[in-house]
Image (tube, rainbow, N blue to C red; front, side):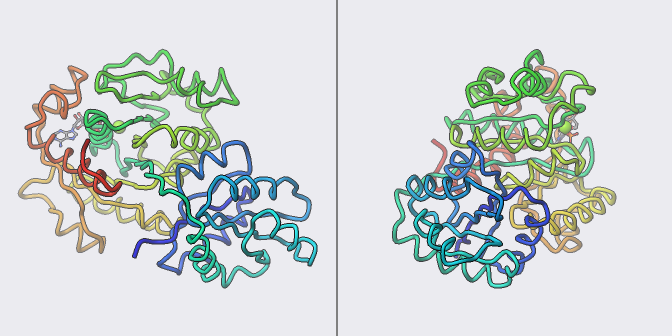
Length: 377
Ligand SMILES: Nc1ncnc2c1ncn2[C@@H]1O[C@H](COP(=O)(O)OP(=O)(O)O)[C@@H](O)[C@H]1O
Ligand SMILES: [Mg+2]
């Protein structure tokens, strides 16, 4: 059975934690992300197409019910649940009028999962046309040099070459080098975007996006390490959510860290590809990363990728045994062509699509076509 996707609209970190905690035990629920009650919310809902939206309203907060009304009108099939510290006949009444299906006290979230399932099933009767979902795919790994960027740029290029609307975001904010792989100039990057248009819109994003020969739209990492600090987790969340409705795939290249911006990207992604080299330190670090991501309820999104698997080293079976998780993809080593493609700035799936490394990456893209419910176009 596919799981019930839930989006929670709440800023407060403590409440986010409580929600995560109460939903973590229920396997039929996937907490797909958090959002703020702001103008980007409806766009975010279009992108995620959640079965249920949790709206948090504390006594002093106004405006939440206005968003409930809008979601109710624009997103039939999406159930609304209000979490509040103010339960009175009057407040429940106005919630119902705004299209809320159920009001839950913030002080007791123990049966929240059951409530979500119940109201989601009810709401599906009111469902509208099924939206073909955008997939936001983060490429992550615990070490530099594991092959994250190589996979991310090639995967994005593969999506784009098969006529999918594709964006690529380089969130390696300090040493992002996707511009080298894609042979693009770093004049306009994410740093210029957030500095020049702090309250950016989708039009601003588009004007800071570079088009690559494969057709993909790229937002590049800052041209200098010192510009990384301009980018905040709020920027990352907003960027992803504003872009969602305009693309079939958004591929994000992440650094080997757990910075706030990296976490924001991971939490706002649908899929996380974890790339590891088949050696002891790759295995050990991946195990630690999986533990952290498990604590953040991100495990469901993860697919493991072994890069440069070859005889004599640890193999994918060792990884599966230690990590207790399948290895979904294995990319063979091809140093000569990896170097050539990087030097030319042409992703290997473009110039050498019959090469085994390119084929393995095309296999990853095939997996996502199927997940979105279609073949390559
Ligand atoms: N499957 C592979 N076979 C051979 N070389 C590879 C492979 N994957 C990546 N590389 C090379 O390894 C180096 C590091 O890869 P990169 O993707 O930049 O790592 P990361 O982004 O994890 O730091 C690059 O020179 C890249 O061309
Ligand atoms: Mg990299």
